[in-house]
Length: 314
Image (cartoon, rainbow, N blue to C red; front, side, top):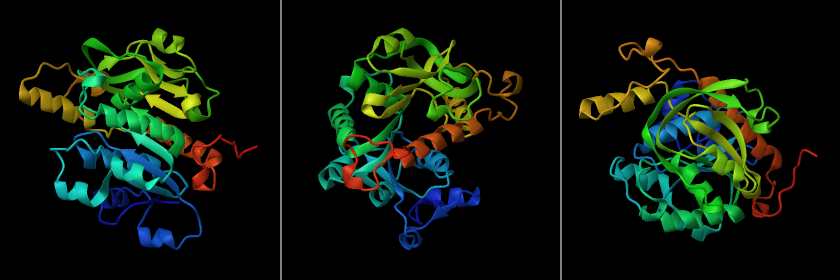
């Protein structure tokens, strides 16, 4: 089954050209099936690039997905055309007022790692969104800063500034091979990392109800499950395109910003050579497993989302 997107959304043509199955809204309406409704709270400055990255991953499953784009009501972007935002995004206040429910929700990272959470201009609204997920979302996936913000809100775990940017492709160990989210994973996998902060393994382990699923000795925990809040938190970037780290590196070099060559990314760490994608297959596995878990456990009646979870597989 395809992912359901507006035909005018840039991701529609991008994914179609890559062979990803996409379906316009009018065609989807003719199918006698309830698509999974997944929201994307996009906090990244390059909105269109981020839309493509996540739509590519959740659109690769055999299920019909309806992607809804959401922005913070109290925040305006300077990097994406106002026309694009007006046509495709709804402010969270509008979603909140509608009372609608979602099978899944992705909350992206944001380039504001250096700020304390409480100093973020839309922190109060984002905190309301976190609470809203507990009654209106079946499963939430926080990514990078979005994951750190959500785990801090529910568990009080703090983020810590690093002495140097964690930047490159790092090996991670599979700590929970029995987890349904890691179905098909190898004992080790490589994940792109690009951040100035971390959450520490011992602080996560001492928090109540958190399970570390993927971990790196070099850059710490990567994937954490929070069953009580029906959430996953990933601090790294499986969704990155092959060239995303290169774009970040070239940007900093051009700006004269001190930056290390992203490790284990270019062949022999030589930035004159094309980078290698070492994470694509595991990225599809993780997001495909997440979507599969949603499909197998979410209520068929959307009004029951947020109530006591029933595992429909048993």
